[in-house]
Length: 319
Image (cartoon, rainbow, N blue to C red; front, top):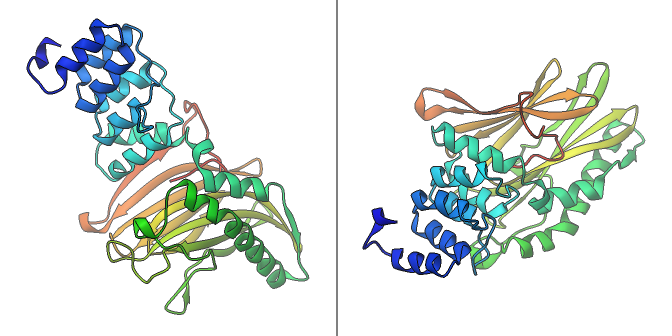
């Protein structure tokens, strides 16, 4: 701590250490950004999963300022990565051209599913659901009606849990098959892979007005995967994308791969989520983007490999 003699907060940290209150010292060090103190406090037995009075963990505090050296010390010592606040604090670094940012972001992402309230509740409500229709069109209409009904049942609790609503400039409307200027931008695709048909459907909710707080329309989108057999559909899984800028959404496929494309006309950065079919389950194979402002530069943010501790599935991926 001699390196910070006279700095703000250092006297308080020194007092915590003197009184053997290592948890408080670690949290204060996180608030002040003193990453060089973290290692010593962890070795002294400080609780790396401690939270402050505001409910934020030490990891979340470091993630807020992308203090990667300190965050990685916590990760190396087994900090709980199932931390929604830490993940949210890292979201702004998603498009940064920094491998360490992306590595930490995806470490958090792969462990965040239990905290992804909307996606988990939606997938639980639809788990193994089977829907039968009179014909393909009737079947698709029934799937859409079911998705909208279930999503709207979850929406009030989601708004309350995430503290969303008019006070935060988001006045949520109902989930619906989203249309803009009379053009249906939904994924509405039946795709054949290995002799089986799979249906992808997307519903969205916007903020109840034509524009979001930055001038663009904001949507939350839930995309579901179904296996189609004759006029019967069985739910496989779904993924939830909160706070997407207004975008055209497409699905394309090649071989056993399906890519969901978000063509964002606001930021000119298009994002691609590619899934691979494996044992009747779609696993997230990679996440990439194309930046139209940088001569269509392509970045791969995540690529599955056999060394991953967790293999993403369509029912445990969130962005």
